[in-house]
Image: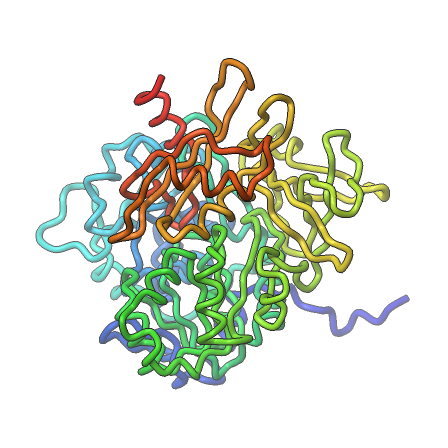
Length: 520
């Protein structure tokens, strides 16, 4: 029988953040414009938020929502929610009032933090479960039903509340769907998020002295890739209110940024910057790209500038990921790499059996940081599971890919977006990879549209390179010379900009809807 006089504690991030404040209170924690907070001050501010929530009746396990941009108060609110033992429900500022209300009701939020810029989008008159509404960054008199964040938080005690969190408690509900019909709230436990942070510390070489630049929305899971490990070790977190290439380069140079996560469109802007080659980015230990596929030419430009510090990540919010490091990238430019620490990935065919090496299958992942499931959606959770020969549960990603003899993965596209033409599967990323190499193509996306003979046919939506003499027929012919006969692009449609979500993923449903309106 084991000795239990020193039982292992539940490792939860709020406790580690408190330790950062206790032992390194003067160490820099948050930089945002003119705002500079050390760990002691950030921790005290988070405690005030937590104490205020408890005074409003929030109890361990209750959901607290937020509709916040990257504002000076956002991080202390997020930490305060967790410190109160509540469940963090960060909502996207890009969604409509109706969609936000559906998500807030689904999560059963007790309190809602809303930035002044979005109070007309989501407010007490909207049908949600929230009983308390707190205005953040609001100017002028408040409407009835609102609390002012600054005054409310300032009146709270700053000592840490003891709520007895365990690893099994819920950490967050993150909504990955923008539909109003069936909300898809991804639930992670405190244990899963702690494991996630710990794995990223090791995989990304993040330490106390690291300086983390966050240029993506704090409400999005992509930002957690670097935020959570920074909170775990007590690194310095530099937050941009919104992305700007010049400002990002300035911050990297002046703050000595060591780590960042950006989406591909942000890296495109960086390498196109007129001062890109002249800037000193030697402090960078890791520049991570993820959220969408990144162009070959952008990869090569990043490698030329940053060398091994550049990395690409493929992953799912639900909880598994694959990375390709700089020293591996030139030989396998189209790969997304190998699974990160503690992750197993299998490729599964339509018959639910693993496919052979080199064959295309659905990526299914398992890790110590998998989600608990989809909130209030047991059937959807069950549908997302695949079990191996030992009965272990894996998450079905819905993405298709293949694996080479050395264990490197290559993504082919979304299973639901696969084009079936004449009974043959066409993977859109294979076509997009070829198109992106054309000098007149700045950005592109391929969708399948109805065809009377073949069932579906590929159509390319293209954003032309500025100043290029772009001709759709010529681009299609050029690409088709390099594609298989069954893959040929039937037409090219020019578009000013592709519809993308906050993390840079192309929303192909919008392209299909547009095509149906304009060409049916």
